[in-house]
Length: 409
Image (cartoon, rainbow, N blue to C red; front, side):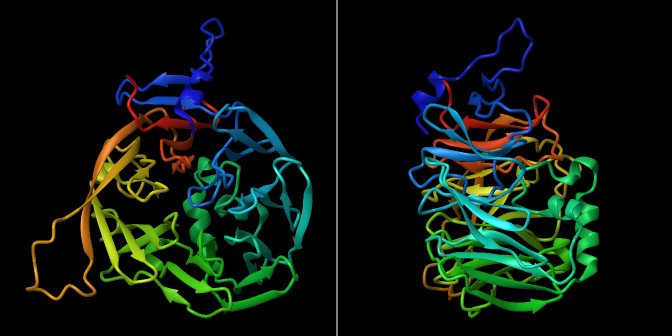
């Protein structure tokens, strides 16, 4: 995202209409914030889904009218798809926008608007992932259908408000978890139409995300109240290599809201030891098994964390007082500078298999005191690493915003 182009074209509020500003300097942080979307009810994608075209020039968002793309250089907005749909993601290779509607998965080219049907889903089927080279879809098949309202409220790819705005998210999650419906994972070969099913169980399988670099490696979770599940897993597209990547070491320890690093080497996640008391962002290196944990303070806990494209910075979207951290002053968009604890043990200790500890040095970017955290901000870095993009209802209806990491002069 070009800072010069983006800022030069930022529209300012017309004081005669009493509209909310679309560009401002946050008086508490000194960082510039701009509103990227225009249509009330617009939302960025879920925090761990790819929203950007491979060239980094455009970002896909959901709107009440369908799917649109924002040009991150000019801020021009163009409609890509009409109608109510469920966005899956933007292809890492081709820029095609993948989405589902009425049990059918489609892909639309954002340039030509050419649309092709990819797959017709079986009863109880849902697709939520496309792999790195866009040859495979991954999804779940549920043995007994879940009501549409409940499914939309818990679906990580939904581009609509989640039902926690009506106080229902936690209740929905517990109720769905208690059903123990039969589920299984499946891979769909886009070229041949072949379907491979595996891992049939009575656990709730959710949050499927392929590695951004390995087309045959899928991350998924056992969904439900985090203290009641063994959550984060990986598996290969042939059904082998099923691995739980975090093993609990104490009662009430929780881990979740997992996401990939851009290079596909590390899975990062929110870790609490125990729940609501001690807070970390933990990383698991898939090739080596090495673990890194970064500690953060209670007020810095965030609903979702994310990592910059170069892996050098993290961000968080903060949280309300009624959330798991019960933060006294946690409603901020954060930038985190990770710092490892110096290792002075030398050769006296066998460190193989030990966790490498570190801390987050937090910087506040946006005051979110006017934001209702019933809508989760889902912060993510722009492809150039110079902005953090998030959704917010701070001005009323949901819109998509970006905050510049460099302080305004």
